[in-house]
Length: 239
Image (cartoon, rainbow, N blue to C red; front, side, top):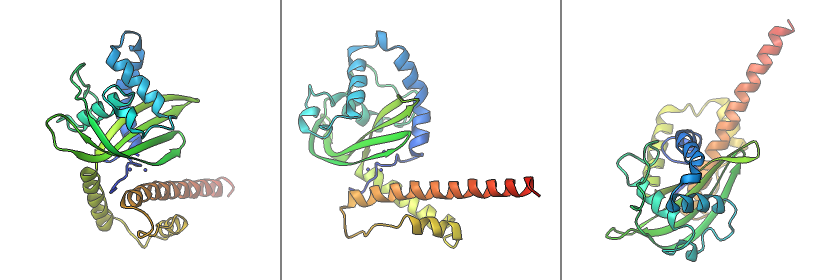
């Protein structure tokens, strides 16, 4: 957030959400970590870039994405997985060594980081071009799940602006057709986390704000349900 990314989001990961994405990716990433001692130079460079990207203030600086830059492995593998027929989230969607394209990266712009423990993510909006392919604009997002004070799972994702727009259009259609907007709890949660003024920020940040607001509203609803159950339990216990 994939992320919370112009129309964007990736502060929330499309097609399944951040938590589901991390769960799907965890088995493969844990296995790769266990085999890190015998990992290839390409795999080691990718893992080192993921670790560095979590705190690097220069995450969105162009020189980091040159052919020999630290983050070239991230964008090349993330872009290739996003265009794979297996899908970016497929557990078996490993990229064969030596097959990742060298990406040309331009027009980099940072987006606000998202940190909702134990999840965190950072993203850069950019234009990328693989050899022989048309340029594509979107977000490179690095996502982390921290457990017991250590990074347990990390991954890099590429989401084009067009795929993000499609995701949000589909999501809004589902909301319009399947959500009871008169639910008093939902109304209260939405009032607590109001929408931003759409004229006040760029389209990219509007979509990021939509993602983050949706996440907070869902958490508000979950907390309310948990509290309601707790009060019911206490009532029957003390009758």
